Image 1 (cartoon, rainbow, N blue to C red):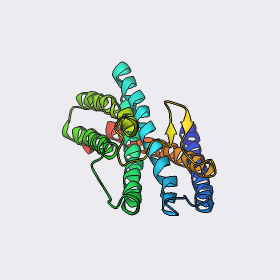
Image 2: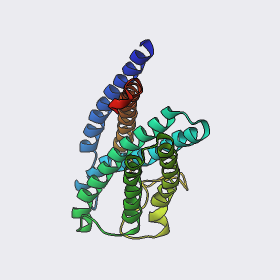
Image 3: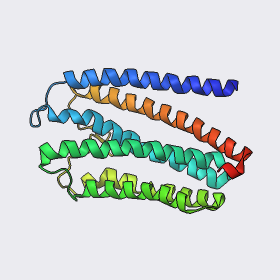
Length: 230
């Protein structure tokens, strides 16, 4: 019980700090100087880029849990991989929506099948498929193994999506942070707002995973006590 309380306090602290950081990030985003070419429309980037970073990086967290499940066979690792992917899909959906809202005034379309958007769409389909597969398999062990395999294989598309703007130059602009060179392609005057929003969404991601993980753990314990209820 005391451990559960500590976990709840950690979740609530992360949630509070995340919301506070989000408020500060919103203030910095709206007071940052307008972009030369895009004017004020570019401010969507302060939501779009952080949600993309958090959503895509979190898929590697799911891979760690998936590998741990395959190595040790403990149900809690499968449960946490699922929770992380659930929350990751939330942030990736936010990336998709903000990107479409940004694309319409800047590109003239909400969506186009250029390399970055196409690889991102494949990423979403794979992880939506993750839950389709889970709902279709009744055997818990087989379900967990199949889910772990999809999680690990699906993450291969993350670096492909990230590098797509470099490998196949098209409509989408290059990376905000180029990990291959260690350079930022973002205006230094706008960088603080972006970093604060990345921090805010990272804290919220952590809080959401903790809270959802606690709920999933309790649901699992309840089902173990009353198997017919599941």
